[in-house]
Image 1 (cartoon, rainbow, N blue to C red):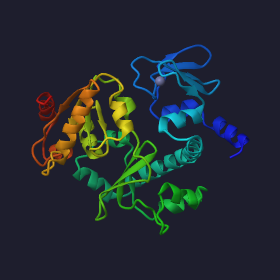
Image 2: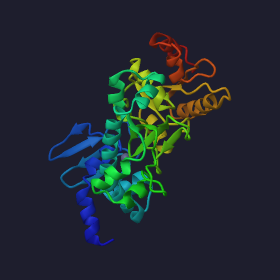
Image 3: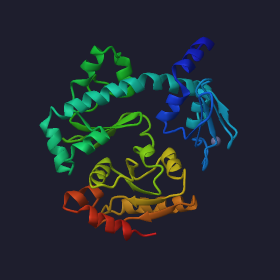
Image 4: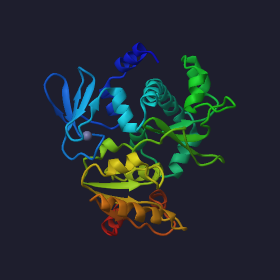
Amino acid sequence: MSRQAIDELKQQIPLLDYLEAHDWRPVRRLSRGRWMGLCPLHVDHKPSFLMDTGKNLFYCYGCGRGGDVIRFAELYHQLRFPQAVARLLEWRGVASLLEQVRNFYRIQLHRHSEAVLYLHQRGLRSPEVIEHMQIGYAPGRCLRAWLMQLGYPLSLLHQTGLVNTSGLDAFSNRIVFPLEGNLYGRSIGNAAPHRFLPGPKGGLYLWEQVRRCPEVILVEGLFDYAVLWQAGFHNLTCSMGNHLNARQFRQLCDGTRTVYLTFDADCNGSGQQAAQRLASRLREHGLNARRVSLPDGHDPNNFFVQGGDAQQFQRLLEEAHA
Ligand SMILES: [Zn+2]
């Protein structure tokens, strides 16, 4: 890539947009368009990360690192320069594409009664939770044509995994939850239940909304998240599986807090083992980790679907093991 193309890329991606898309939030405003916030590159307890919107540069007084958006991508994703550039080019195209997809699927949800019925069966009834999570529906066989009509090239649709090698919509008969830079689709038919687009599943679900809570409930599934949120537990996040990626773990450890690990009580014990391992790792990082025990064979979703209520769940939180 030419020097000029690289300069263009840097101009087209405001560092602040990229930081915010990766959960960074400015905390304190300084003069001349400069902001301070917590450093996303090290475990930071007081804002030491300086972001200069005018110069499109950052500097951290804690870990001493700084530079432009490419340097940030190199450090944050632990990539070499060419890979960091590729990542940013992709981000620029994919961010706008995924927004279109999200909106399209949200419209489809209300046109397909089988999807709404499925949500009801999983205990999701309030329009607020559907709005909050921006839940949509992928009927299949309609996204590709619509995106190409909007001018997105087929190669990009292949590259993002929205269209499969046979040229069909990759998500079909799936409830769709937008994630940061990805989508999660839950099959309502016979296909494999869980599907993500290729690439990282992203950080903790809607982390920015809860990172300042002194107590956070962590669940492993988005349907668990949905019923708990609906029941009024808003200090809540989700890891999309019981294995946390490095980024999710770093997010949980970015401050002092109590984490209530509310993983599935699977009959084979895998959820509880994962919770136990995670609890000890969190304690090593100085967090207060508590494991919530659901009745055998339950996850938070079917706990509520089968008649559990907010009071009963609150009791489980209070009884959680240290
Ligand atoms: Zn730092």
